[in-house]
Length: 216
Image (cartoon, rainbow, N blue to C red; front, top):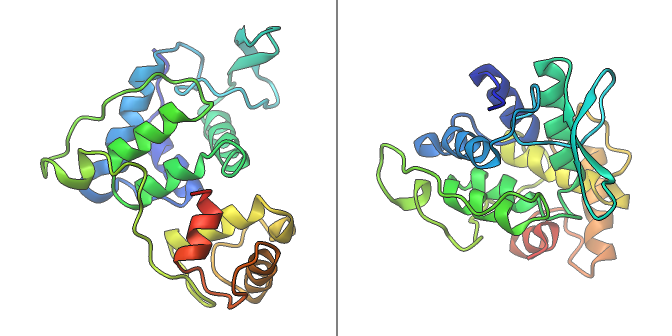
C-alpha cells in the first residue's frame, strides 16, 4: 500500500488550512482511514491523485476512455504538492471544500462522508473513533459545520481556508498564493464575491457567505 510520512500528512493539512492532528486527532485519523480505503500502491500517492507533476509516471488509468491517470510521484514532496493542489482546485467544482471544513469542525467521519459523496471515487469508509469516544471525532454531522465569522485582519487556519475558497472564484483569482490572512486585497475580493452572489457586501464571512462559499 502506498504510504506517506506523518510529517508529509502534516504538510498536507497545513496546505489545506486544516488543524494537525486536529481535535481529538480527527485530521490524522481521517487521513489514515482515507489511505486505507484507497488501498493503492502508487508511489508517494496514498490517495491516488491524478494531478501531473514533473518526473511522474502513470500508475494506472481510468474513466470511460482511460483519460484519467493515477500517478507515481518521484518524491514525497511531489505527492504532497499534488494532493494539496488537487483538493484546492476542486474546492468549489467538486465540493472538496466540504472535506476541508468538516476537518476544521473536528468531524472526521463527516470529512470521510464528504470524500465518498464527491467525485474522488473513494468508496464510503469509516474513521475509527478517537480517544475521546464519540462526538465530533467519531460521528457524522451530516455535512453541517459551525464556523466563526471571519473579517478583515483575521488569521489562522479558518481565515486561510476562506482565502483558499475565494481563490476558486473569479473575484479571488489574483490573491497571491502566500496570502493566508484577511488582507485588504482579500477583503476587496470577498466584497466583490458577496456582491456578485447577491449577499450583503459587508466584508464579513457570516452564515450566508459561509453557505455560499461551501455550496450548501
